[in-house]
Image (cartoon, rainbow, N blue to C red; front, side, top):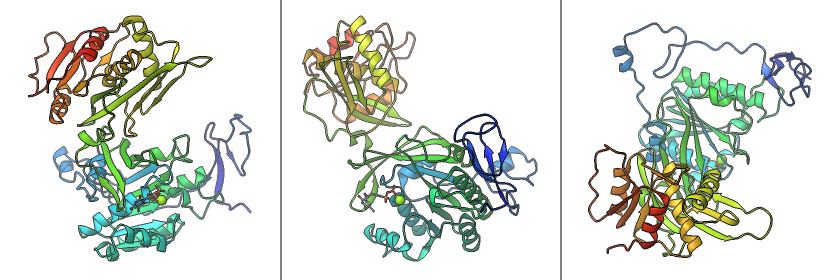
Length: 468
Ligand code: TYD
Ligand code: MG
């Protein structure tokens, strides 16, 4: 029996219906009806917290506003804190997305321990696992002998209102809800994980976060298609959306912000899943060089920039004869449309005719990057594979490739080159600087070869003899 307090609301034409229908009788959209609470429960308004917006605030000079510029709650995991913009903001709400099994619960339990270690209390609400399972994980992570054993409270509960109550009673510094897909509100009939339930639960939890000032993190499972299951609408409700990604068979995990009201969305966090949970990668410049191949044709290292950090990543390509039908363009970790474009430019502008061949390319280490600066190394890897000539091991290349086969300068070149030199690379192939741009001195030990076209770059790469 339907509870009186909910209606079904079409997300396209806003028609209100008493029961689910498919498609919407008014606009004909399929699957657009979402169960919604008719009159949202009145939540007590409290004074707005730093970094949040609420009624009852009055205009104040900027100087006064700067004073309550959110103090941050460090979560004790440097990579996560950096992606958040320097820790979590009290009273804010963060959505942590990721595929099942990628390590979300592990990361958050470690964050809980980080807050506990700094003297804060944590409420960890779980609808996924039992309290005992979480205790097992804490044990495995070696947290049971530390302050987390007392300062982290586990609440096995689905009901978002009850989780909110517990937060009001306990006033934790950090509230974790694992996961939003298991949270429900009583007023709706829909099953846990339905769009209506997810959205209303998030709204209830966001209200609790604002009122208690608890930094709140919701776990959201990401479906195979890559969206956080259920609700696009959720993204508007939260202050930040962070995703934990990686190849589940590998150990590398990346953290990125898709949205961040309190920080940049440029920063990349790099973690490694080990015996004792997730650990930050100390020297990310090196992280991807470890599995490097030994000077085979089709490989070159690219000095890339993710946010503020330089990363040296090996780019690999394989050009093979196509069996039948249209030739393949397969890319892992990089943009396949870009790959197809480079194949065309190589054929027309650099005399490397591979348009009718199968082309595979990937970034070593299971990382995904999308930077125009990746063009040149990718094109060089393709040329190297096609001509079956290896690019010497000490060579790096970076640059954007234009449709005419011209090379364009990239941002942050000096930083990229310093990182390459630091790791013992001896030759860098880069685009000619723009006319009038100040000449950057090359870092010590690195010979910088500036070229204007893709053709010149290929000649330089395949002939470069690294001076050791
Ligand atoms: P989990 O945090 O449960 O993932 P999620 O919450 O995103 O579904 O982590 C799942 C995987 O992590 C699991 O396959 C085991 C592995 N793992 C480790 O490798 N080391 C560890 O210390 C822990 C706790 C988990
Ligand atoms: Mg989990």
